[in-house]
Length: 584
Image (cartoon, rainbow, N blue to C red; front, top):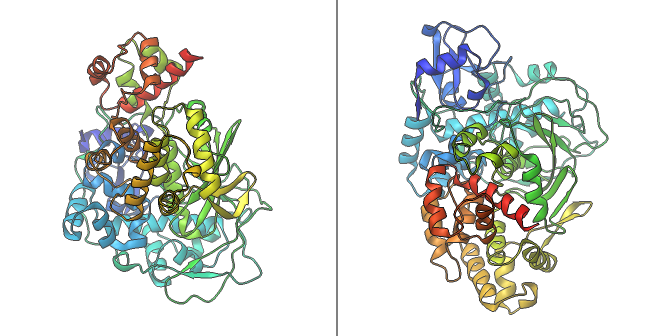
């Protein structure tokens, strides 16, 4: 649904935080853009412009407000709700695809020409892929400027810039200050400090199309797409903070994967990233020892962290994940290296401690963790629809802010879904644990019980092709399906990533013998964040429906669930919860 400029101005006048992350306000007289809830004086209507993205505002010549930090908010829930080209492109841009593969690589993954992709993004979002990626890089750089003592050369290449000059020009244009001034204004305590020795460098992939300016200047966007029915809802919490060490009161912020830093007092820590200066030649990347960056991931309240973390804990695999009271830790396979993330629910945010072997993976890691926890969801919009059903209303009130767990690795979710077909969660966990023990890749910097990466598609395909059925015990038909899927993934014939079109992905999965609608739907729900998937063939889900007085047979339940659209994935999570409670 479109939000007209008049509606947007009313949201700004009332400083309605529910709209933060859905559009930005730009003020002509000051040249600054703000979040809708900025505490600064409201401009006159004639001086206000509205943009759907921060990149569009930057392309039009505006810089970020230092008071409200418009990027320190949850990402727009629209990217999951809308399944069009612009929405899928934003998911990949937030994951850093443009920095790694350029605009041509982004277009290839989406299946369109570079020209058509640029035209669509400029029309829909007010900026092309270069401008959107530039905003992504700028806020990644600000995190490192304000929370570490890395040299600016190291920061430039870690954030994805192709040169120090491009880094300096972008920071000055976006934030209205030099990198030196940003660092001087940030608190000194608690930064990740440089090591005494030189840093080991790795050659990075060519930046290609990702270099250059922000693209064509964009005009103001009148109506702003929100995709939230009557309007976005759900209070926005404090921005994502990134700090060095273990301080919980720090203040660097991340939105939709990357963010600006918010100055605040932080405490020093003995656990810091060991990174140093060194000669930079070409487009080099920064490799670091396994230090820790602490982040605060914002979300729209309310959030059912108990249900979310319980879901992940029930499926945690030994070696890959560790879950306990109030925390969830897992290994991450990232574009430039590996990482370990520990997530803990906290007041108004989720605290994340990140250990990365390569700082260039910061943006990708944050984006994937946000998707894993579904932090960009609009819980009030979900509750408004599901709460209208008298059968669901009680459980909606019992578990406010239900989330649909996402994914950090498409291959992992596909294999989990295949093994989990028609067996209990505990049985699937046992089988997958044997697979991880046999084929998982050891981490170079393990953390406690998290020591292993989930196996790659190549490793699984090779082992099963060689007849090593003991690594994946169970029915031969299931093992053969896993082998075929692993071969398709390893060969590039099947791609499972957040930029895929849902219908295309489901069709490609279901053409493989042994994969049915349940598996394809589960993969779409978790990897793509598809909000409107009801797995009506699931036994536990149907038990939950019966426990709530809803139809228990798939066909009748499917017909009844039409009223839950476009949030049937969230309804399914509530039914799963009711089914488990009834079984207990």
